[in-house]
Image (cartoon, rainbow, N blue to C red; front, side, top):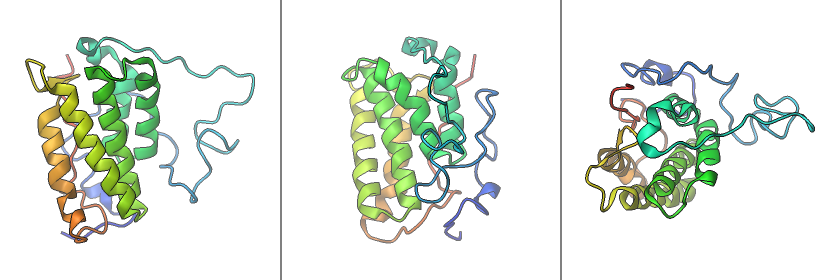
Length: 193
């Protein structure tokens, strides 16, 4: 399978057979630093909020109510469709409200770092991608250690962690230079109740 180095051409793999978890529309573009206007600080950004205007509220729900958490679900959709910066931002607001050392905080931190690792890989920052995927795997492991089930917030966190590690292992040997969307570790949530 060819390596994809740009967003174009990856669409044949991205999202195939994966449902959308919410109906929030995708942003106008996928932000890559240095390439497009910064989404929140540039007036041309897709998520810019002018001074004095209200930012959308963020509502953290308990983990068992994940299926009602639109910010979480939208983050999953963004991640699955390679809006990595945007996914990070969707989950960041939730993480800021969470108990950062508890299972929900560590789980969200793991997802945030996984999205950031993918963006770093896309930007060819191999040391950054390596550091972030390894930290993501550690956070995901910590999130489910001691829980009765590896399923957390609708995701089999243990399986996703294993898929993330498998996806990035070639990077440690300098064999992966870009994303292979047919092997990408997608977020597959259990039924959306």
